[in-house]
Length: 224
Length: 294
Image 1 (tube, chains in turn cyan, brown):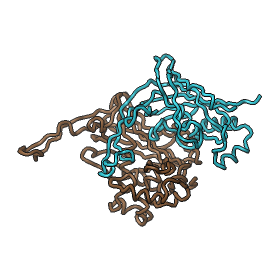
Image 2 (tube, chains in turn yellow, red; image 1 turned 45 degrees about the vertical axis):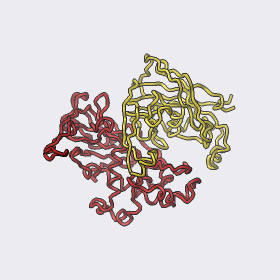
Image 3 (cartoon, one colour; image 1 turned 180 degrees about the vertical axis):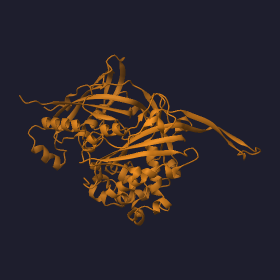
Image 4 (tube, chains in turn cyan, brown; image 1 turned 90 degrees about the horizontal axis):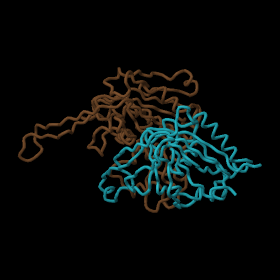
């Protein structure tokens, strides 16, 4: 029987994290757990496979949720025209998480729509008989060696991990934590995968129960 | 991919003595501190110091850099600077900002001119511009946190000459806020896989390595008189994907607090210093250098 999906998992920890709630506007506030697309990007920073799609399935919280105010001076392009003209900074107020640790889970499936892939990726894909299996093996190999295409981030690029890799024996899932309700969570911005236009998709009425957040399954992700 | 640049893992060990290494704008410039007492230095703050060192081409420091930087100072300008002219920067990016083409971007004045855009990436966003111009950088600094909690001391500044009409003396209550003593660790990473997208070169990375040791020494102020970079470890991997897990390198080079880790330290003697990588880790990497000793 041909398998259509291959499971992958990893652990990531760090001193600061930001999983931005889009409803928090220009003073961003973090969700307690990474979004679907953040988990996907963390896996992809270790290995990105042109012939596969990574579908996050769940995340386990392994450190208590702690919020922290993180304010920086901002001189970037999102300032008002007047501020830019006068050379003024403004303060970017963010509510981040500190001392986080998560276990991330995903399924790898063959990519459905290859029409948007660059030519080099199409050529790679043609040489692979089972892209999901190939990706899983490459991913696990890299994780064991601490290799990555780029350092995975905990939301913002400056929030670097203190650990990423295989599960550690010393890590404990917060299985006795009280439930946390997330009424609405941004799932993806580019909902149709690689190179697709902006299209926001939200998951509603999520609950982190016993330290576990399960991302709802959506049929459009899975290979037919 | 730029094959000249090697993947690297870095760690700065920063000792703060009676100084405010990084004020928090949200708390009247108190030294940054977490609810558990741990001190914090933002990457934004550290990168600003590097940018300031590169941006001042007339400084004694810049003029004493290797000839390649002094002779080609127009290749080492700073994008994130006050008073920049957005229209002219836009024209430096491309004649047609609605469309993005990687090859012509790499040949653009923008890429040739701005060191910080090549090395840290850019978020320069203009209305109607193609988002391809926004780039993730090659060098990534992480948040610096102290090993033990830090004690903050708050004093009032006094001024003999009055600053208000009719007064011959002045006071700024609690204006002098410093960390008594703390040792902070700030990681940084070099991701060579992004170099081909931002145009970052080995010369850009070499300049970064020259700047890091001077970042605090050449930026002293009344509130930041004594911030010492004890070590600036720079570890090159054997290949672009990495040849040793970063956390092993970072953990091996983090000083160990002697005594109770939950109590603020008083001096450098409260830590067991790490002066080299263990042999088994050295065997996994290409080189391990302390930039402070180069």
